[in-house]
Image 1: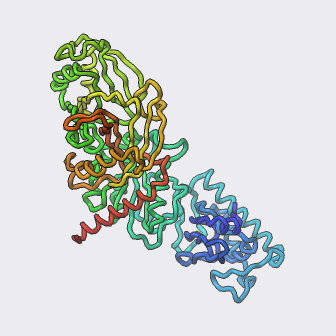
Image 2: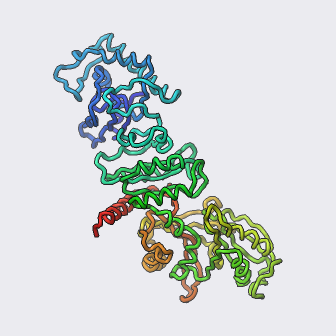
Image 3: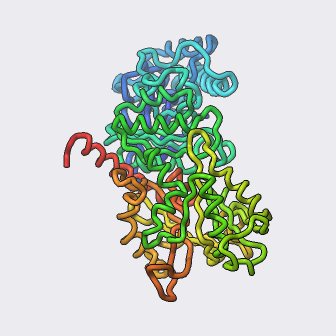
Length: 557
């Protein structure tokens, strides 16, 4: 299928790829991109990026007022189609105007070319159709391409993006390309003279993709926002099979953005992936974020370490071994309802609100007896279980076991009943709050996840209702946050969130005003699919971090 020139020009669409027609009207497999123009302006197509073999007869296509083909990669031609190509190349150049130079193919009508031209147009249509159908139906073929001078991207699988130049592709082993790149529909052409290069990592599979999509819905928009600012940005799939190839490919890049959500992916070891990120950071790339920061910032242990901050919850206990848990938790539970949080997990998984079934037992004894019945509600979906305290201790001790070399941990916090009013999630890019979301659980529940039926309402960060929160956390606590976590040498994450719960004033503060306390920090692949307008600030901050990192490497203060 060929697109009409007028449709492309009116839409301002930037095509690209190993198309059938160059922007100058010739046929080749040189990568070109029609240049969008302002409304009413004259069309100004780019010259091809390198010389290519002209197929005489391009004037025929130009006479049909056809635009350069859309970015459908062309496969090598089968023998039957090579014969068509040879026939096309035999069209006499004398049929073109002597005044027409390369890149200025004249307008010629079909009638002017006569029956010979009509047969050529049929052959051309057959060639185009056969190539596209063969690409989809039979995979890569073999044989000659449309360019013979070695400058075109010959033999690429259909799923390769047209934006990958031959120089970029040649740096990647043939057997790794499809694993690393896949499909990239919607990715803008890369700048010819980029200010720098950023790679965005993802992983195939998982539950954070739309059906049929390889990438997260926010990955390509993030790439495009970086590209629009004059930097190159490549979305790449990580798998253990391409670990070393990625190290080679990204040599000399400025930074990486990790968008791999903690999950189980086929062919992906999270330990190996984090090793890759560490290696890239050590090689000089700006880490967004570094795996060490991800581990410490996003773990529930962070809640224990920031308990002394204005928005930290003082009544927070951390258990690193089973003995301490069995000794301390029964005494804490005797003071009132508690919340147990596993060190890892998301969407409320492994977060349990623990209440005594016999509420009169609170504060009656210094310790809850082992046979007391505890009512448990998991935040992921509000489901309820009942266990004796002895059963609860056995069950929760499982969270303290070492898994894949990572030691277990449990966080024990006082339950704040105002969670039923909802929690506030503040979305940050670096040190700038961009949005506040009020997440209200459905009636009778405590979970604030969409999965559990919670409703979300968005507010700007300067909304008057949240002035106290912004003052306490952004102005007072934020400068102390990373040092409190032992991460003082790292910058704040590129994209992160902080969740807050309303609670009563606690020492050293007093009064009847509302106070907000941090319930969770997260910088591991924060989703912005519903907030794609923030991809611009994300790109600005990513470039800023890369430039600061570049200065540090060059020893510039």
